[in-house]
Amino acid sequence: MTLFLLVLLAALVFEYINGFHDTANAIATVVSTKVLTPRQAVIWAAFWNLVGAMAGTAVAKTISGGLVESGVVTMTTILAALLSAIVWNLITWWLGLPSSSSHALIGGLCGSALATAQGNWGVLIWSQVDKKGSAVGLWPKVVLPMFTSPLIGFFAGALLMWFLTICLRKTTPRLVGMIFGKAQLLSAGFMGYGHGHNDAQKTMGIITLSLATGTASGAFANLPDALGFLRLSSSADIPVWVKVTCALIMAAGTAAGGWRIIRTMGHKMVKLQPVHGFAAETTAAAVIHGASEIGVPLSTTHIISTSIMGVGATKRLSALKWGVVERILWAWVLTLPVTGLLGYALERLLHSSAK
Image (cartoon, rainbow, N blue to C red; front, top):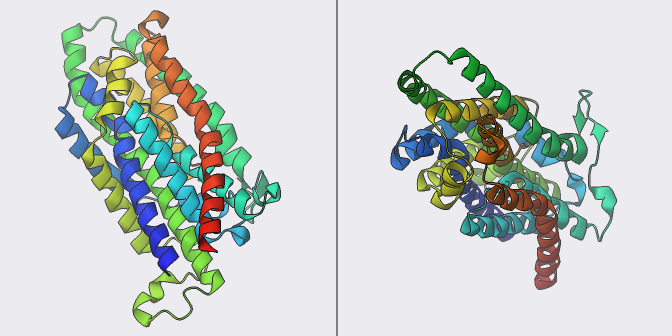
């Protein structure tokens, strides 16, 4: 029971860090275009994060049972996964790099599960079909979207910006600024909703996985009736208290802000105006929402970053600051392998300490 409480605490810490680490995803553009002040933008994003977090469970179910064999998972496995993700998130936050909290958690979970299984790669679900005939596993839910979603974000952002440019070519810059200054409030809210809808569910999934693990191992068998809500009848169930808790913690983390990453996303990559911010946010939010509905734990960071790049590229490719883009790409490339190694090492360390 003590180990479960540590897992729960680590999960909530991860969710809080995810909130302020990924705040930039929802509000960097609306801040950089000066449509909202940083404080106003954070409050706006926190509200929509909360709403989005309560909107579904498809991504949570992917995390809780669709990436690694649940039979091999222990509380130590989950704790190591969370700690590795927390460490990587704090490092990238300190460096101001918009890395993926989603991939950090998934990498940590795969690495720690591999360590628990004594190096048996068969515990990782690469690709299979579930009872409903849907593809599940690391390839269709994580790896393939990791490569395709940034491309979709880039080209869809560029296409939307090109379309808006054609439609607005006879409109004065002042009127365009006024129109999209207001419209960006909606797109920023949609982006905040999408972030909550996808990212908050990842922690819901990891907590549910820990509840299923505790139930299956008998750790919760002798709990008093008041704590009976910890037992799960099915690993696919996402308890209401888990949804509410994760939603509130993520909203609180978002409200704390993440100014280092906001500066990178909203100011250093490319200079944005309200119409560009609207195009980037709308594109990213639409892609994230679609992924959430089919249970893909997408990187909101990847999508908004490449959407901004695509929108900026319509001005001219030289408008992008390629040095900053290169740093972001390196963070993307390193996240899965680094957190996988961290998860593996931490699980071995925790396992040895428990003996």
